[in-house]
Amino acid sequence: MPVLVGTSGWQYRDWRGRFYPETLPQRAWLEHYASHFATVESNNAFYRLPEPSTFAGWAGRTPGDFVMAVKASRFLTHLRRLREPEEPVRRLLDHAGHLGAKLGPVLLQLPPTLRADPDSLDRCLGCFPQPLQVAVEPRHPSWFSDEVRALLTARGAALCLADSGGPLTPMWRTADWAYLRFHHGTAAPPPCYGRTALATWAARLAELWGPAATVYAYFTPARPPAPRPDERAPRCPRRPLADAVAGGERAGGAVA
Image (cartoon, rainbow, N blue to C red; front, top):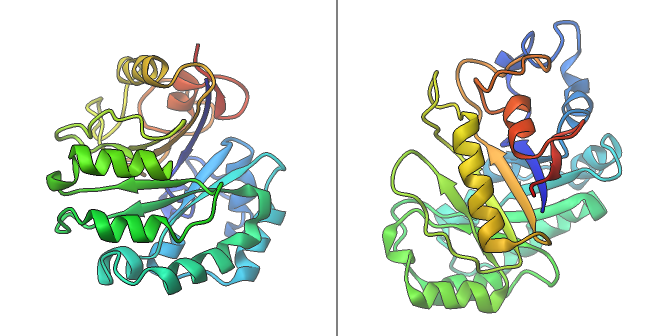
């Protein structure tokens, strides 16, 4: 099972001296990040959509097999609340499309106050061309219904499996690939993840998706800062946890 492991974002000042060398200029952080991780979830577009040239620049600065997931604009998910999605989806893809083959899944993270609206979600998903992968992260329990599950399956969209320290997202397989967001583990210091928790997740994925599915897994940045690349204990969700899930030189590999 190919597992691509990364973090949600890479531009965090408190990573300097822990993950990024003290003397490394911030303009070179993406290259350093991409030498350790096979993917990243870019949340820039959620707040402000980068210019096409920025996406093209990111593509040019990363290895050929690097994958960048893109979190869709809050204008679409939080302000319009999925209504009239055509223009914001088109604009997002016009810009993010400059990643070329490195464009990975698009994440639609819905606001916690947004109740289930299957018609609006269906219209929104219909704006994304095939075979672009789209993951949906609902945060109101009304979304977890048979109707929504059938809709996601029909559209080939993945339900984002979000671990936030509360009730688990339903373990639905709605696509032939999986998308995970690790928000809050129970290892010390919180909200970090230990190897036991990661092994449990690996077993769940192997059981539901089998050996051929691709899995994208992203850890939300934690406090304290990211560990140094040579710190092997599973204290924070960076390289050590990537090793626990995926193995290999870079955080992207396979789970048996």
